[in-house]
Length: 411
Ligand SMILES: Cc1cc2nc3c(=O)[nH]c(=O)nc-3n(C[C@H](O)[C@H](O)[C@H](O)COP(=O)(O)OP(=O)(O)OC[C@H]3O[C@@H](n4cnc5c(N)ncnc54)[C@H](O)[C@@H]3O)c2cc1C
Image 1 (cartoon, rainbow, N blue to C red):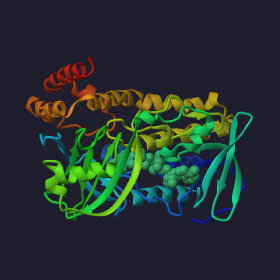
Image 2: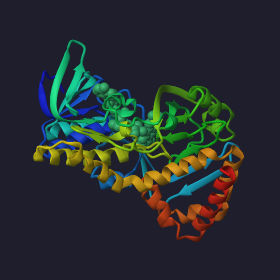
Image 3: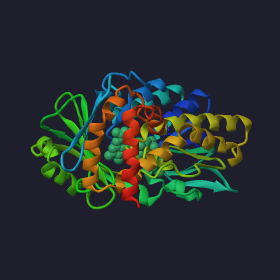
Image 4: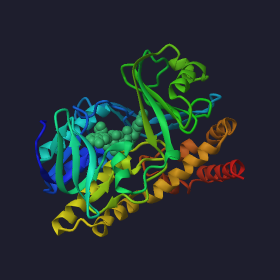
């Protein structure tokens, strides 16, 4: 990939993350001349993501299996722990999730996009959008030796959670109250690893507003992190590693080999993600699961819709917001129901005290919720997943119990 001195193109994609590259791949396949601007000199680095993704969704997009070296592990089990150490285990009938090496995954998507015809301009930061007569008409980009003004017929913003350019458009930005701050580490010498299981640690005393995670690799190392809605994530991680009745047994002697910080947006998609000559996809449009903070799958799905709608608009010679609003409609029909349910679930879990969380995990175990969910293979669309499972007696009992718990926590 080389730096180009181009002055105009049909579509500009801002950001070479997974959503940007997948947008560029789909645009290029549809014959749209596309240029991606990425501020870092290399795609995928620095990496800020655990890369825990649903296999079913990757398959549905034709992205599974992946080339060697990208997949680190597959999982059929998730263990959920309360702050007091109560455990609820979900053993699914086959591996349902995979842990990706995110840097390699991002590089793979960028390579596919480049092979399909997209141009990548690396080490080039988009400083601002060019907006004339109410239309986005290109970008101002800066790299180490020059400033460039590049015109385009449409700009697709996939800049991630910073969402600086989105704010320039005047569209409703991400909700600060929905943002949690994450620490993501790689650790060696983690003990008692169950290689088939992702470990999830809940509780206000360890990860207020989110949870902690341990994602094992076959070599005995693990990705370990947590996010919080207040306080210092590093201090919370120290506490999880040394004080949690279960996590401390795994992590107290572990060695941190890399460490990074990044934010996660949990408030659900922004109300409008288009304007004249402009679409937003991925984290910058908050297309992220409020329950888990997972944004790769919804972002990729939105990227495909963005590319199709943009291509159609370019062919019709009309990139007005009236035409581009089709993107919003498509995204809403794909995941509006699920994102609403997941936001409610997030608010529900956040409203529970540590004691209530402990009780909830114990009762889920007693009611047989794990058996009722055993055959689940789709974990992204959690609203539809719950609807499907709600016919089972254990789930009816559990949902009744959750409702009571919710009402008692939110009188
Ligand atoms: C600690 C942590 C763990 C996570 N774990 C998971 C997980 O297990 N599974 C999951 O599905 N999701 C996870 N996520 C969320 C996931 O990382 C994001 O949803 C996903 O990366 C969104 O992709 P994106 O392309 O929209 O944004 P990003 O991946 O953030 O990519 C944006 C790109 O744009 C570039 N950029 C930004 N501004 C500019 C600019 N002005 N000019 C040029 N380039 C620019 C950036 O350098 C970056 O490369 C996690 C997030 C965090 C923080």
